[in-house]
Length: 308
Length: 244
Ligand SMILES: Cc1cc2nc3c(=O)[nH]c(=O)nc-3n(C[C@H](O)[C@H](O)[C@H](O)COP(=O)(O)OP(=O)(O)OC[C@H]3O[C@@H](n4cnc5c(N)ncnc54)[C@H](O)[C@@H]3O)c2cc1C
Ligand SMILES: Cc1cc2nc3c(=O)[nH]c(=O)nc-3n(C[C@H](O)[C@H](O)[C@H](O)COP(=O)(O)O)c2cc1C
Ligand code: FES
Image (cartoon, rainbow over all chains, first blue to last red; front, side, top):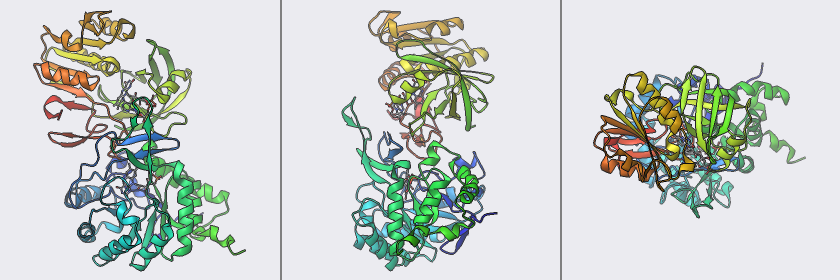
């Protein structure tokens, strides 16, 4: 018997597998396909104060080993998430869920966090300061250490729930941003969000996405995620939720060795809707293959070699 | 109901220079309505490719697809016997209960395939469908003989006049007496139909998709009744709710 359970900011997870925000909706599409209670938890679609339609179509593009998306934070707004989505979710998910929060101003982040802080079903708040697909919000907070610290401090003041700050990979130095978030009161860090990318259709000679640029995710970005989790782990003492390109149990082990306490699976859910239960099922055999008895023993395991 | 299944290619042959027909066998019980689609996993491509249900029988699914890019090119070369990973039962499909006695089915180019299974279902419900099929040229024609074999009136229109009536599907609509319409095809055709149609109807839309089952918000459009995901709340929308 191997142990898959970990704890994330004091909340136990039956296993470290967490579907990533924006790739799992509010859970029901997947609840029709499998019992989503098998998951560690999942991160809900990014929520803003007001309802948002998002960007014009096309919003999706094919890429080598991945995809671009420019959904642009389409969501029903925090009021409806609380009055409609959370009650519906209660019927199919009995674990604490992760709420993912976005905003266009510090006040908006605070307002949404305050509202979600009052919800019993919400276990963690994951603050997205890294959405590349909206203008004047999202990523602009995640690319400057000062702005990242300000948002973190502001939301920290209105919630006692574990607070994860979701970092952007579209920066020169992710480590410095991770550090200031820890200093400003974050309980953990989620990384990475999508990498800014673009495709052009030679037939039309135009960008494929109406938004022109979009966020790259999928297996193509796994090495970037491993590198960033590895670097950030060295610089902070708070737990890291690692993500980016995870598609199998082996990738989970790799991100945990780099320093992740739990692992999110994003785009893979879209192309392979049973990806998460499959990964959970594959994990014990994969662990045995590498002589791992308890996942907790490998968190940050790759750092042991540094000083030798 | 959405299901992930593994289907075997029984047939895969060209109908025209660029359009092919693929017959698959296996568990297709997840498909419940005409106008629904399936999402195919192909080697070396990350996103699945959506293709409409063209015909359905016990354990058998027929797709008709046009080769336009990498994915459909790969589909053309797949040999009989290949096993494909397919998500079935996607989308709402056409609602046959609204058809009235004499529904009109209007298909343009690669929008024609889903109308075939719809036509069979309407016949099974004792309706008297008329079919209009629009192509650019005679050489691009497909499925016209199959529709005719169902015993329904088939009006073919071609832009260059090389087969059937010269002009667009809307030229074919003139003089037809119908109680309701169902259509699938390109946007300019939809706009033209909306201008001349005398009754209510249903349009089947296409959009680039991430998942095809409602999770990613990649395919959302605006309607008079709020945002809808083409893949889940569509692909079929009613005429009165569409924002053109
Ligand atoms: C609900 C639905 C039903 C469809 N039914 C049929 C059908 O029955 N027969 C048929 O021939 N085609 C159908 N299509 C269009 C078909 O999905 C595309 O032609 C196909 O995905 C092109 O893939 P490709 O790799 O060959 O082309 P590429 O151009 O290489 O594809 C690149 C990307 O663009 C997407 N894409 C390209 N064209 C379209 C399009 N028109 N609509 C949506 N996504 C597109 C692809 O899925 C892929 O992600 C349908 C599309 C939708 C949304
Ligand atoms: C369609 C789509 C929508 C997304 N929406 C959000 C979002 O609302 N909030 C957020 O924090 N991240 C969002 N993301 C980013 C993912 O949560 C994840 O960080 C990223 O995709 C990298 O992981 P992956 O390679 O496993 O997909 C989205 C990703 C995709 C593909
Ligand atoms: S394609 Fe993902 S919601 Fe429609």
